[in-house]
Length: 307
Ligand SMILES: Nc1ncnc2c1ncn2[C@@H]1O[C@H](COP(=O)(O)OP(=O)(O)OP(=O)(O)O)[C@@H](O)[C@H]1O
Ligand SMILES: [Mg+2]
Image (cartoon, rainbow, N blue to C red):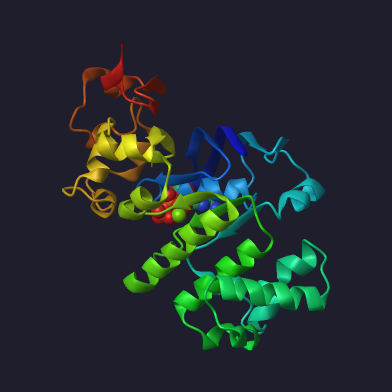
């Protein structure tokens, strides 16, 4: 196991009220494994990712990464693990300096994290650009002279150059055209086979999750509602929310657009967080929040599965 997350929690202030964006989330990732995190917009997926790389500080919980708890690690300890966990975001343009050549941006980690010299960096940058399918002349280009797909390839090159053990991908294909998306996904699969990295793959695209991921964590309003192998979750979803998510009738987006239920109400009323939307709602769901249970080789948070 390379990552063991325990009871990770993050609260934010919204309209002078505290709400829990990530609520007691636990999961593990083994070497070479790909975990998909899915759930409607605002369910806390990016907040988890940002806590893992400490762009956000957790309120509580543990992030055990190769024997070190990153939740409480200090600056120098974090710096030491920076090489091992890399993250790629939805909009790669935001994470590149428009005034720098691609080779400088892509090679930054080699300079600051690995301490390599210019010659070594140029060589490795060229290799990485080649690996992600960008021609050598791209090294001297500026970010405004390349396409969105090429920019995302460059972001992947930058992330994999330091040979991370865990690569976190947060919606990395959603800003790209469908054909470019497919190329990027093929690239990730290829790199995964070559480098035996572990991945966290956050996306609204469930087809992608099914294609790429070994395990899936389903989130709803900051909670884990179900998790298990991708095969189990897709072939036999057990939680009513997972069922809705996977059915064509109610997609991720139109759940979010259901304005008849106020966000406040969902956050602050008691019982199960999914009860307002749930087709299987029972009396107990109104007052008691279900605990996570282990059934059929998976975790599930639902009163339907009480003993
Ligand atoms: N820095 C912040 N300050 C206050 N609230 C925040 C902050 N970051 C996120 N949130 C809130 O926390 C909740 C979870 O946000 P998060 O970005 O993790 O969701 P998500 O699952 O990644 O959604 P999406 O699929 O739209 O990317 C949302 O209600 C969001 O508005
Ligand atoms: Mg997000």
